[in-house]
Image (cartoon, rainbow, N blue to C red; front, side):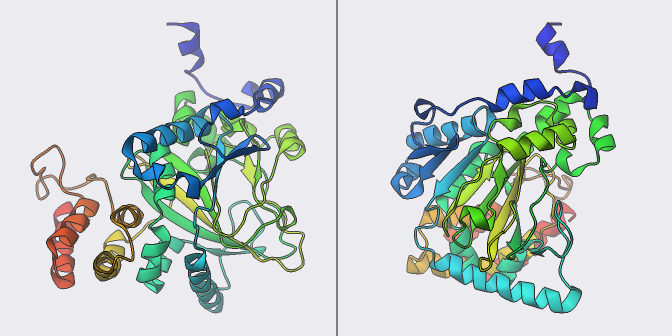
Length: 393
C-alpha cells in the first residue's frame, strides 16, 4: 500500500492537528485565471455575477463548465463562492421575508422561539424547516422563490442531481452575538468523542454529502455581521477534530474574512469550511438570512420534510405558473428540485418495483409527468398517495 493511501486510513484525534500545516493551507491565494467565470475576486472569494451568467446557465455545455469551476472552488479552491444578484428582482425576496416574519411572530406566541446550533439560545430568531413552512404559507411565492436556476446549478455542481433541499431562517437582531467557529453537518454536528470514532476516510466523505448556502434577505454591511469565513480551511483533513481547539479558533478569528452582501445575493460554501455568523454591531439592521442546507441524494438530510404535502400544495400553482408563463420551464424545474423527492430509494421493492429501468419512478419525475399530461390536482394527489403507500412510507 502506498504511503499516501496509508495516510488516508486511520482516525483523527487532537494529536493529529498541526497548526502550522493548517496555516500553510489558508495562506493560499485565489488567482483570477483559476476562476475565469468569476466577475471579481475579493478576499480570496470568487464572486459571480448571476445576471451575466444567466444565459450561459441555460446552455448545457457552458453550464457544465461553470458547474465544474464551482465544484473546483468548493473542493480545492477557496471553499466558498458568492452569487451576486442571484435574485435580479428582489420583489420575491420581500414577499418571502414578510412570510417569514409572520411565521416567527406566530411561533414566538406558541413556544417562545427555537434555539441555535452555535449561538446562545434566544440571541437570534430561528425558523426551523423554513422550506416546508414557506410552502405551506404561500405555495405560489415558494415556487417563484425556489425557481432559481443559479441556485439549482450550484447545488447540482456540488451534489449532483436529485439533491434534497432543506432550509432554516436565521434572524440576528442588533447586538446579536457572533457564532463560534465551526464546521457543519454531518460530522460537525457530532461531539468530539463521537466524531473521533469515525475513520479518516469518512471525514473526507462527509463534506461532499452536503452544501451550505445562504440567501440574503436584506443588505448586510460588515457591521451587521455577515458570515465569517476562512478560505481554504475546508482542505484540512483533520478539521473535524481541530475546529474545537482554542489555537485553531484563535487563528480563525485572526484570519477570517467577511463579505458584505446585498439583498438577493447568495453565498455557498463547503460545509467543512471553518465559518461562523458574525456579530451584529448595528443599531438598526435585523440581519435575515435563509440558510440552505442541501443534501446529496445519497445522504441523510438534517430535517424531516413532508415532501408529499409540499407537492400537493404547489401542484395547482405550478400548473398555473406554467400556463401563464410566470415561470420558465427551467425555473419550474429548479423549484421542483427543491420540493419533490428526486431519489427512488429507500422503497419497498415488492410493492414498488423498477419500471422500465433500474429504479422506481420518483416524486420529481411523477410531478413533471403529471404537469405534462395535464393531470387534475385531485388525480395527482390521489396517485401521489398511492405512490407513498407502495413505497411503504
